[in-house]
Image 1 (cartoon, one colour):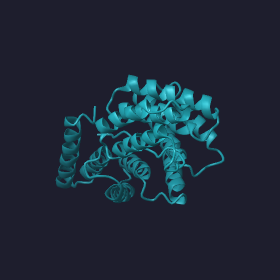
Image 2 (tube, one colour; image 1 turned 60 degrees about the vertical axis):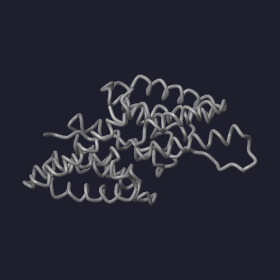
Image 3 (tube, rainbow, N blue to C red; image 1 turned 45 degrees about the vertical axis):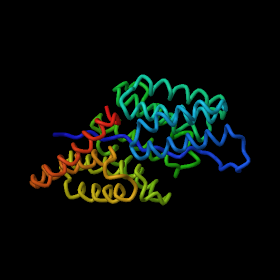
Image 4 (cartoon, one colour; image 1 turned 180 degrees about the vertical axis):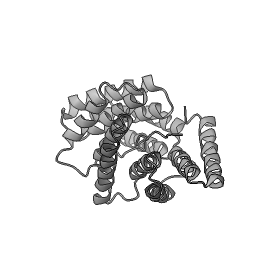
Length: 273
């Protein structure tokens, strides 16, 4: 069975400066709820994140803070499969960011990438590549920004789907390089890129190159994520496909069983669609 490459889904820290303890109560409440929402998203606790982000939204009228929280809400709805709500919140966040920060502010690529990821999932391909490239253009002077890695990963999916495997591989290798040079060697986004390289190499029959990618992704997941995180399930399924292809059927079944157990538990908690 041919596997599809995957999107980067782990939450990012918003661009936000620490505030003094004497700051306005509204701001302190927003900080508390917003960053608690981010922590729960990172942990794959999407229902908790949804409640916390909504509380954060209720605590501020400042445009750029609301934009950050709207973006977070979009990611949660995206993760649980409510794509209409996700697009609504992403678009509102993007409009607010443009108004409050300017059309070329370094905070825009995150939401542009989110919209591109969503449209890719929905197979609405008309503007996917343009959104990823717009995000790259904004980050032209910040080539090690983590959003550059996300854009490259997304463009690799587009080229892979066209059968342009050399270009897809080159984009993924560039994304690995971006993360390595920025010393994000334990970041979940890097694990996603490595998983995609493993999937690509498996699909191309380059099995000896695929396994080290999955092994490095596994190391990052062990360091950065809980064992029941949805991203772990994706990697386990991909590794199982590799093992099946190279005749390690028993190990493949064991990994696929673990992956399904994670997904079933997440669905039962309302965390996956």
